[in-house]
Length: 345
Image 1 (cartoon, rainbow, N blue to C red):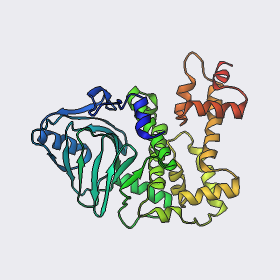
Image 2: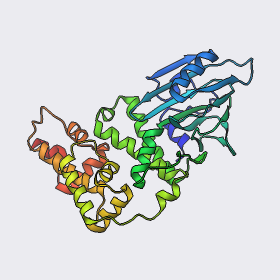
Image 3: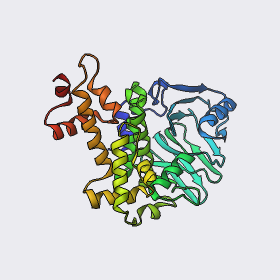
Image 4: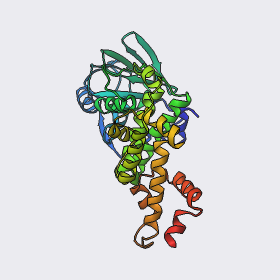
């Protein structure tokens, strides 16, 4: 199912409308801006998405800028529409990268020699490493993911096991129908729904860091960049002692917001090399091993908790399980009963 259709079915993108109403933009409860003034729009949008020039194409057109959004740790999610055709000229920026996913309408985007027309099936990945320009159609509105460049490049370094020597740059066009990108979109959509519904997941440090890490990993693997070859290349074998140290670290710090990249960094290897070491030596992955340890810790906690004083959801989130349905299934497979049955007993 395409990105635009997914959002329409959840009420984020109305059918048959050229212009998105205020209530139909994602994150309606988190309004950041509504203005008809060009200068205010340029300044306020620039605070979140970087300095840029802004000019209505038709001087008679009525600017109706609406922006909603939430910021997490190294990631921000925003929805933005201008209500009329506009020309946007972002300035080169070394602090952010943006993924602009059209909800309605289209946008002509040029970045260096690359040029695309962004649509609900083709997003624009803005590396912001050189001057660029965008022309948004009158009915264009977008969901925009903002990544902190330093955090994303640090995450890249953990995946590769070495520090990037050049700034990270992506190909401009992102095909939203490709399976790897659709997987990335599903994580974006999960974060969006949690933010819109006030979900407790975003209040849990372990869960939030896992989701942000997954979003960055999937972006780096799904979208071509100047480091795609390095990420796809063969990984050197890690010594058994590195895997043993990783196992000890997982056992000792399972309650902490822990990612595979952090585990790999702590034992001095790349994340993908560590994954290969776990597969070869333990016939599992670091993520699976961490999940099994956390399942054991959840069960131990549920067996001693008072059912009137805690819930399965609280315990699951506390141990980093962000998909409750998958958690319950994994728990039953491992222990032969549901988490609620353990808690009641």
